[in-house]
Length: 204
Image (cartoon, rainbow, N blue to C red; front, side, top):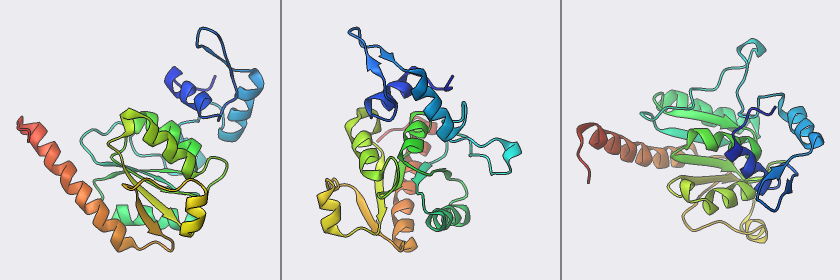
């Protein structure tokens, strides 16, 4: 009904995004009301953030792109999202840049795209960047993802809401595009080197 794998549903239940009852055997039982509520938010079988071509919106770039650097941008502010998308289109046309509008969309896309870089806002509803970062850093399969935070919050507010890990790059709003480009340049070089070594059979 939702168009999701069991793993995706388990993550949504475990993160509290879909209410469910766990049985003694570890299974998740979803009430019909919970399924309907999710479908109402995202549209039936549209939970992976894909747009139908007939809707007039641009379709999401291919998720499965092992030979391209994949970046997932999570931003609910249209102007900032457009600025970042424009940066990638102009300076990094070979990068697979995916866009999500909140943490829930990002969780569903993470399951499929496994990005090398995750760029996220902090102040989003209903699933904010703090919860998204907690989920990503808690799961071993995402530990290689480079994390970038965009925010207008002050240090005290960030600390009050749990703080950020030392390896997270913090960029203040309004966004300094040059700083973000420097970060992406470094990771694009690393990815290109790794891809070249993999194709020739040489490893460091």
